[in-house]
Image (cartoon, rainbow, N blue to C red; front, side, top):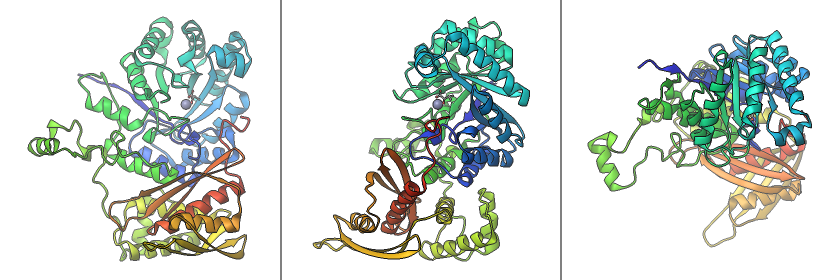
Amino acid sequence: MNKQPLIIFDTTLRDGEQSPGASMTQEEKVRIAIALEKMRVDVIEAGFAIASQGDFESVQAVAKHIKDSRVCSLARALDADIDRAAAAIKCANAPRIHTFIATSPIHMQHKLRLQPEQVIDAAVHAVKRARQQVEDVEFSCEDAGRSEIDFLCRIIEAAIKAGARTINIPDTVGYAIPELFGEMMHQLLTRIPNADQAIFSVHCHNDLGLAVANSLAAVQNGARQVECTINGLGERAGNASLEEIVMAVRTRQDVFSVDTRIDTRGIVPASRLVSTITGFPVQPNKAIVGANAFAHESGIHQDGVLKCRETYEIMRAEDVGWNKNKMVLGKHSGRNAFRTHLQELGVQFDSEDVFNQVFVRFKELADKKHEIFDEDLHALVSDIQKSEAVEVYKLTFLESHSNMGSVPHATVILSVSGEMKQASAEGSGPVDATFKAIEHIANSSTHLELYSVNAITRGTDSQGEVTVRLSLGGRVVNGHGADTDIVIASAKAYLDALNLLLVGAKAHPQNNGV
Ligand code: KIV
Ligand code: ZN
């Protein structure tokens, strides 16, 4: 059967970054974009250009590097947003502006304070303005899941007439139920007279755990683009997960009349990269990319799989990129091999000095851990780039003791804006003691919201990747640290979070007045 293309629109860098604490640096965004491009993602939403100067530059950097995927910037239905988005994606090979306005009664009345007719006028104006700058314009009806179908038909018809070539139907608050959402897509496609002039898209949030089911119901009813994120990252409970959408469609080709062009072997590496960069671990039982997704525990299952894999496996682990965890470099690797490999991963250096620092750290790591994987390199580069940024607190010494039967204690020496300070503390464990010692110096009044440790690769010589979430006066930041010693990784993550709070981590893009 001839399959129709299903466009995969990845918004990890935009909606994914709206997860509290998931902010990424420009360089990290470029690395993720390169992984998405390698996977053959059709559209990469690189950010919300007007949100901040940093967001603008990140969208610009992604636009510059990516050649095989479309690069998109989000913009509200406002002239300034659209012009900023257009400027950020100017150098993209295939640029797209994605403009949106809310269409539900509750959003129009309470958030926008606009009459429905004014909302239609704003949408038409925005689409026309975007079309003056790029060919490829997408229009989204924010909170479409709670919008009235008659109004949606009117505004979408007008947006298509104004030049939108993709119409996105977001379930912004994750309220939809698959059968009803599928029916909504069907109604829109049959009732809107010019529906055949646009691709219809879905963008579902996971508040009820139904984002993937709702997206697939819409696909079954004619949607031909799905907006999704790696690991289902995204605002609140997240977005539909890219890996689940792609593998559902690929695995059930008997059911779907569509297919994507995704190279699924890039899925697990991309999942690991996003997890390492954001510090959001993947739950072990997560479909496709969780550590247990292909692990069989029960004897009956193991026996079945050994006799015939298909008895209990509907997908092949290697098809989604498992087992690709191969050693890439070791302690004997030279500068050239190291440089070339990092270039392949999309890592760029501002100067030869920074490269030299990374190389020294790589050699130190290779001494402790003989096999170095891509995941190790990503963690190492993110770690170094952090210390390149403005740091108030820097770890210069750490000693921790924990013996059975005695109280664990730790001593730290921190450089605080260049001045050395030392403190010791006891705690319930070496990490607790280390955090208390740091707090004797910092006295930050922050609240520890989350502490998590994750092994980057297999084996006891793996680097531990630690996330520390701190809050202060309503602000929440995630700090990250990686090291083969998890107490050191924990101290680095704690200090990273403190530094982020002190230098003012980027505000949530939709909270800073835009
Ligand atoms: O969830 C949503 O409605 C969005 C839009 C901006 C597309 O993210
Ligand atoms: Zn969203």
